[in-house]
Length: 293
Ligand SMILES: C[S@@+](CC[C@H](N)C(=O)[O-])C[C@H]1O[C@@H](n2cnc3c(N)ncnc32)[C@H](O)[C@@H]1O
Image (cartoon, rainbow, N blue to C red; front, side):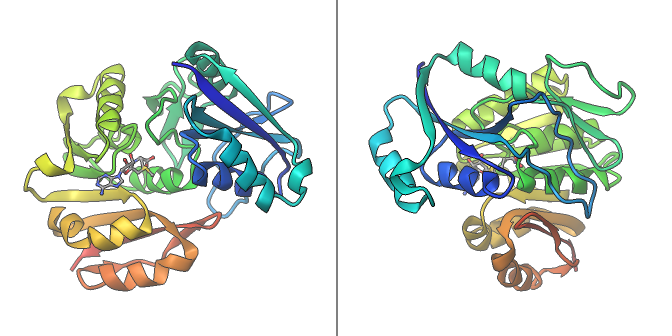
């Protein structure tokens, strides 16, 4: 399938903002590239995220997308207006994959957990390594909302625990939980393509026999020791009773996909069921976590 790739020139000040713009304008995937081959490692807690001074932000769009409309909108909000620097190109699947391959590096989360693309050398063979290649389902570890959940999972003792991954996307959190010792993970997603991606990624990691995948309409009734949900604030608000129904007695919960400005309301809502901890912030995103009372 052909794709259209839109490249915007950015720097460390603007890269994150432009990435959000491209996502808001319908990009199926957004990535950053640097002129030099500088690896990006997940920052330690408290460290600032560093973007390259000469960054290109790339958004990937379905070839049928109305790019004139996207460009009109971007120019209307870009500081350079009609002089906005961009490049639009049509690419084939293979070229897109190769581009990602050149720019996707192993990333470490917390103390033990690595997410490694299959074509790179595994930096710490004795660590907990999830092999994951970028695909069209959300979740490679490069987004702060995913990173916040991966770091949280790494901090838990998951041995023998049952985990629910609500909004599993690529399956990245499910795979991490399984590799960190969980007995079983139930992944749920509204998007059938995400369930397919999760299944394939689980096979690649040899954990498919411990991962169950469901569309919301088929989701089982059960309680888990640990529930993680990286979806946006709106669904987290609406789905609060559904999500809480999965959290067992004294079970642990983490919620991500929430902006700092939205945290207080959700903290108070989920506080009806859970003893909530102080939020953890990465860039403008926060992770809420707690334990069922
Ligand atoms: C931000 S992605 C998170 C993917 C992955 N868990 C991660 O942490 O990177 C959110 C996922 O939630 C799914 N989703 C959105 N609304 C949902 C809903 N109401 N029920 C289940 N899944 C939903 C989306 O299809 C998407 O795959």
